[in-house]
Length: 217
Image 1 (cartoon, rainbow, N blue to C red):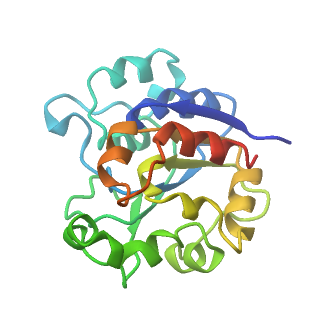
Image 2: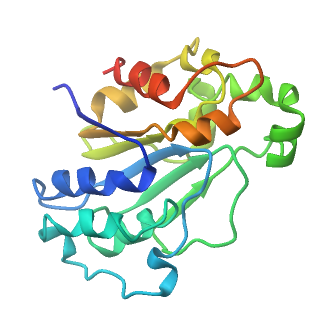
């Protein structure tokens, strides 16, 4: 079955599509995410009450939340709203000390340079940037991947891709499996962040990254 796909501009907008899937299921699915940033802050930064565990039953709730959430708060909100069960977040930027929910796990390659090196000496980072969709990279990044037959969401923030070559891995077995077996794929173009973070001489945009990833379905 071809997975459903949703493309948004800002990462936190994906929760409306996650909730559409949740309302069709008997249980909340897990999410596997690829991102530059961690996006693990508490929803509303603690200035408003967190959603109730049955919030997923209200189809209007995610759209209302999007108006108030910042980009890095949506995993916490979705977990507390009962939309997702776990979030496995693979990143290439710096880790954060703030992980708002116990069902959020963040993974970063041990040999990745710091964000300071990525931004100020990007050519030193190019070999790693080119490998972020390789099967060897993804299998080392995530200690657990979806089980056969599992219903899950694959979520990709396009600022995870910092160079065009990354979109054409030599060994694409894992990313192809993740894409083709997901119940839902959400892609956030984040064009401004892609423009800021992409490696020098790269012309790729977030919208183009999303289109090329979507074509792998």
